[in-house]
Length: 215
Image (cartoon, rainbow, N blue to C red; front, top):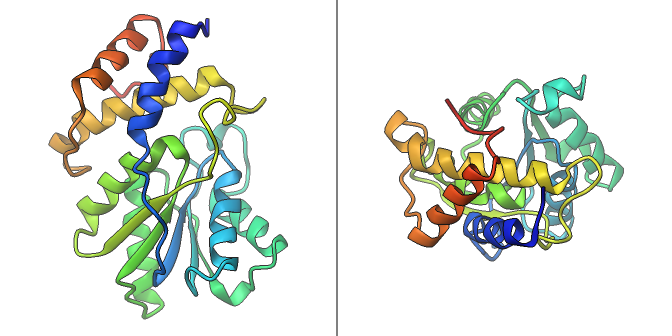
């Protein structure tokens, strides 16, 4: 049940997952795929606003989308960008990755094949995955300059019929756990987690928000 007490603790995770970076001009915009099509809108809008000459969409079918979509995330995202007026020659698609680490590794391979070596990136992801995406990118591509952004939506305004608050909280809890345990597995750089945020995580786990926890 989503009580006011649950929302208070969940907001602490939401705020922590945000990096609050301010967009800067970059060599390319890298949009990481997911079940949230608003991420594609954000990436396309940044391109159309002139932040970068290249727009990359990365994502095959991940843990969430493989059960609800047939087309890869990157393909669906690219169609949204085309519909918004992004020219096809500015779009690059990587549609085989199934997790955040593969997003980065397979994008590296794509860029090498295209003869491109961007030094600065605008990384676009869901609001509550900014920090984890940053930590993963920096593990695999430490020498690149990185700004992370996401759809500009409030915590209260983010849930939809397809992405209800319960799912948002479960994913945020799982992502915080991954920020804690993945550096030791070689997947991310370490990130400091304030005691108050970890305490909120433990309360949410005790209340049953465990469906996205890693094993």
